[in-house]
Each structure stands twice: as structure tokens, then as C-alpha cells.
Length: 216
Image (cartoon, rainbow, N blue to C red; front, side, top):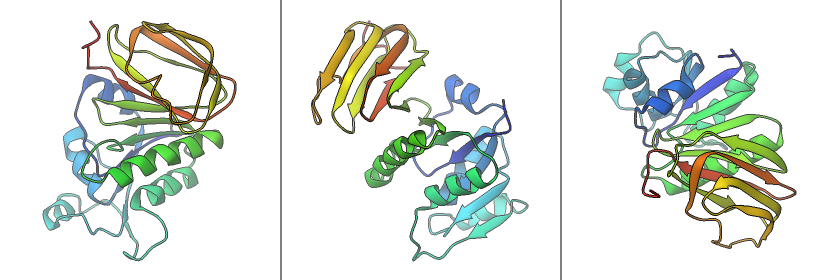
């Protein structure tokens, strides 16, 4: 994997699935505050650890004494995750994997990760958000493909009105579809394998559940 790929360890849930291990293999790692707890499970050592450390237990700090820490005050203008992403970009990141970005106790943080991912994608960065069991990628004007197991579930969440939406190789395909903002029409589709998405205009997130084969 390119040295411009960075995995940001965030504080949400993370399951050590085969897809997760494959996604982060060979990447560089940065931990954001309590997201460092995922480092031991992944068997990696981040190159830097950032945050205000308000969600980092003392035993976790002692487990990684050699990782450089970059502390910030609790009263700051950005989340620990945003600071970690900025640090990765400063170190040359072009692809960002936000591990632990989905789920967890803080739905405000999870939603902010999704919004930030769309913003970063508009700036030209390649994004994957993952909990191990769920994966999310931004969908902007253009085309993307997602390699998903047959019968696994996925949804397209429109963060704006979507025009010219096409979904191919799915149980419920769409062609040149107009999705009003707030519509649930594109929730709970079923993959037939690698799914292709294209969009004329708008901003969206594709949220996939590759281990959920309830579409069988």
C-alpha cells in the first residue's frame, strides 16, 4: 500500500474483520485520543498520538510509552479526529481510512465523521470509514465501485438533492434517478456483487454492511 495511505484510529466501535485487516494493511497509523485502544488489537504502533486525552485511561498511556504524543487543550476548536486527519494530510496523506468512525456512544461524532468525509472527498482525498462490520464511502459527481459480497446490504444517504443517480449490479437498480433531499428511497438495497454508482450532481454517502447477508 502507498505511504500516502493513513489509518486514523478513532474512538468508535471497531471489529477486527478480514475486510478491516485488508483495508488497513500496509498503511501508516495515527491515533486520536481514546482511539489508541484499537492499536493493540490491530497489532500496530501509530507514528503519533494526538488529542486532549480526556478519553484515554491511564493504563492505555502506559502501554504505548514510545509513541510521540501531541497534546491539545480540551477547549479547542476541532475534534481529536479532525486534528488527526489534519496531521495525516500534513504528512502527505491522499487516502484516509477512518477506523472507528461509525457507531459508538457519540452519534454526533459519527455524523461529523460522515460530513467531514464528504468535505474531504470534494477536496480530492480518497476516503473509507469503517467499523469493521460497516463501511462508508463518499459519493460525489462521478462514478465509484464497491466490492461487496452478494446479498449484502447497502444504502445511499443523500446529503443533498441527488440528480442522475445510477446504481448497477444491485437487486434494486436505478438509472438517471432524481433523489429528493431527505428521501428514504435508497435505503436497504442488496448487492449482487461489485456495485457501481454514478452521480451527475449532489453529495451522498454509500453505507454498506458487507457481513450482513440478510438480503439472501
